[in-house]
Length: 200
Image (tube, rainbow, N blue to C red; front, side, top):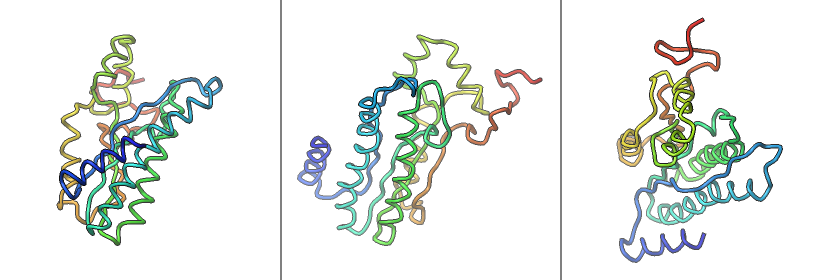
């Protein structure tokens, strides 16, 4: 948390104000829930939830003083629906990020500070490429739940983020925006044209 405080102190000294914050970073742990050590769960919550809250708190204090600002929390669809495959700590943390976003948006809306969240599905990044390299069938598994039939690309996050950062979304707060190729709209037993799951 000291690193987060130091970051905001640097922003104060170099820029004097902060208008937009995107909270992205944080590492989580995976494991079967029946075997998961509690310290690993606590570590995930600390990194993914408490770290984001600390950043929101530091940004919020400054933005409330200014009377305006936009905070964007990057979460995951894994905080909305369960992923399985040992993702319990991650899913718990991402669910907390969603509710934290709603709570902060309610607390700060009347004072000019907006708080929203973007929930990506699987988006290509170095970590995901390594996982798919180890278990190639994962890519088809992921695609099976995405009606667009592909994984997301990092640049596709830019548009929603710019919208939420800008005055184009000046009346938007507490929004939980899936960026998931239709994943949350697809019933667990559903298929779509071109799906890796063959039609019965």
